[in-house]
Image 1 (tube, rainbow, N blue to C red):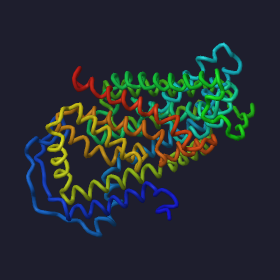
Image 2: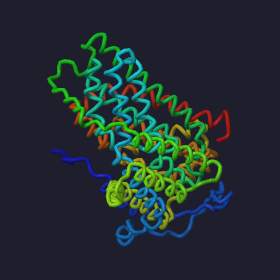
Image 3: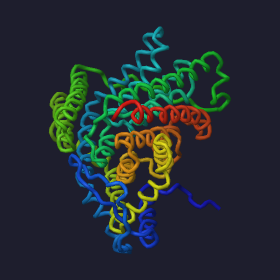
Image 4: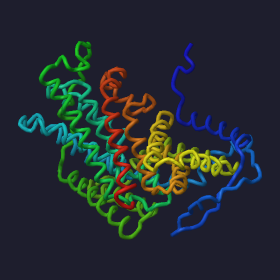
Length: 462
């Protein structure tokens, strides 16, 4: 008999972890580190751990977990709602869809560019994941990339890989993604989107590997269709998108895309020169939404409806952030976090730093099976990983990078990722076929990701 008819929901998992945390406050000895402020950041003083009186938590801690978490993470939750609403206005203009759809149509008009089409589109999806966190939106584009793949002589795996792998490596190498980098760096108390120079290098490397991997498989099928993992399967090909369904890339939509580009440039400049934080960045995205609505001559009521709809789409992410923060409050009130950190530091303290960062990466990758939400995982793990990195003498930027890699790469294969499983369902690709094709690439990307964690340790201070 199956234990679960369906894998537990993320919120159910968090509530279960809350029960475990409460039990742990009765089992793990309470303890504290001495802390000090360094340039406005609270940092643990090494070798200052001491045991204190036990503070076991009970039923009331479990019942107040959500509200305490929401209060503690209020600014981050508000940020998620506002950014989600602003990008929803952009989506309603059709500008992003029109831009991507027209790139896809180019492959039909210019066959000589065929060899460049795949890597170019993969890079576009990767850029979308790395900058504004495209995720659920790929379910729409699957209906476009699957017919494109068939038209080019490839299979459904190539069509699904374009958006899934593209946005996956984009998340892993993100440099301005507000839902992963923004939240993780905010919780780690380091300037949001700082360290962007090295993250751009990381993004380029991971995206290049993804483009090469997909293109090699596509060329293999082109030479011999029997090499396709889908060969012999009786699957109906997804119908091509009707011409009338493709948004026209008109002048207004071009101006909206230009506004998006300028916003990203201003954002990068603001966080690096003026130390912009959550308030300023949220305001910038709201301004983008207003400008997009004005350019597109969108009625005020329509823009507001779009904004509210986008904010509603962020509800699950907001709940996860708040409740995940509530877990840490249980642990904090029970005074067991510092005990866990001290034990972890003792366990890996004598190991080389490159092993320590490798263990961080493995931990984040493993946790992603249970909490595939990037924002939720950031809220749950960064309060632990940031101070742990201080104890180990590792930059908090590296701890955030390890989180990025663990979240972005394994999301492409874990069966708990609703986006990945939904895309495979639309593409009619059996999960075992996808895993057989995708798992070797994830291993290669993970190995390269581990190597990319090393330069900030040994070659330059980050």
